[in-house]
Amino acid sequence: MPTNLILVGKSGASAARSSLEMTAQNIANADNQSYVRRTTALAEVVSTGGINLNSSTALGGVRIDRIVRADSHYLQAEVRRTAAALTRSDAEIGGLLAVQDAIEQAGIYPAMARFEASLAQLASDPLSPSLRTAVVEQARTLAQSFGPAVQSMDGTRQYLQTSASERVSTFNNLAGEMARTNLALSRTTTGTTMQAALFDQRDALLSQMSEIAGIVVAHDPLGRATVRIGDSAGPVIVTGRETEPLSMAIAPDGTLSFLVAGGATSIQSGALAGEERALARMVDLRSKLDDAAASLVFVTNDAQANGLTPAGIPGPALFSGTGARDIALALTDGAQLATAPAGSGSNSRSIVNLEALRSALASTTPPGSGPASLMDGLLLDLSSNIAGRTITREALRTLADGAQSALTAQTGVDLDTEAANLVRFEQAFQASGRVIQVAVDIFDTLLEIR
Image 1 (cartoon, rainbow, N blue to C red):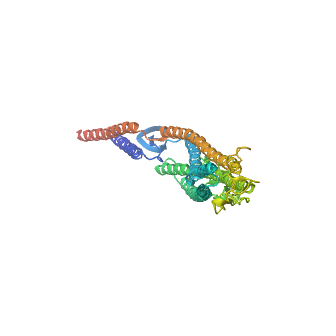
Image 2: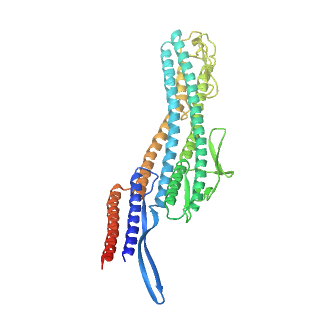
């Protein structure tokens, strides 16, 4: 009897000590976002035996059955889904903001307004050399303002492409680590601390992968992850210890496409999707910027050709070029401005052709046909897109925060609960020690009997 009590007390003390250690581990990782709360599951130790027809049962105390890891595949999947949508929105807005900064800092629209203002001042004295020189200088500034915008947009495009390439490389590295984790899980005993640590590593890797490109995950009975990109019908990236790399191609217009096993695949969420969308939007914005530059060249040169200079000859081209990249001032002298209409004499003070040029610059018929109207439309469209996507991002952030909070409540460490567990397991350890002491006392008493 005393021997059984000693064994029972010893097993109880060992179990309480292990539970205390696990509680301390939980507390130590309270701020670790990748850590999932763990507890020890206990099982009774009972041995049975007998001689002939007599059987007996010997109570052996308690043992550590397994390490229980709080988990929720559904909440994990929801956190990955909402985080992927949020990172997509962040990346897309970041690209669009960079384009907006490029256009605004280049000062194209203000330069166009100052050019129109200089034309208005020239109308007050069309033969003034100083006013004509001011128009030429404002035209030069306007032409030169397109160049920095184009260079900044090119820089933004190159940055997004480089960033996307690095993300693809990181994604493939994470997939390789996921395959190695799957292999380790297949070799690890169920219910051990090592398995719980590998599960934490698995979930952290999946979270990082989902922020780069949206993924769908399936788990087998051993906890190994099969990862598909996109949706449940998307190509497999990781299965068991095998991986299929993701690759990226850049089209001549700067847009991105993605491939898995040589086949095109669509990425709908994650940072890669955001950068892909931002680059696709840049193609349209760059086209609109070229349209504004081409319109400026056309309307000013057309007005120049239809009017006469003070010398009584048709005006030469004001601008050269075909788009935002190569637009330049062609006029060399303010005396070459054709302010008078055709048929006027030399040194005419008529401003009919000058007014025609001013009207063409601000033309809205057909809608968006004039350069000022085109630039105004480009900036309005860009700012509206950013504002709309910012509202969407804030909604996605709320969803992502809610999903993370739900997961933390399910799997995170609650310090109040762990503090209570410390007291409980300490008392259990002391009680087990008391059982051992009682067994010793009984054994000593038996020895003292004469």
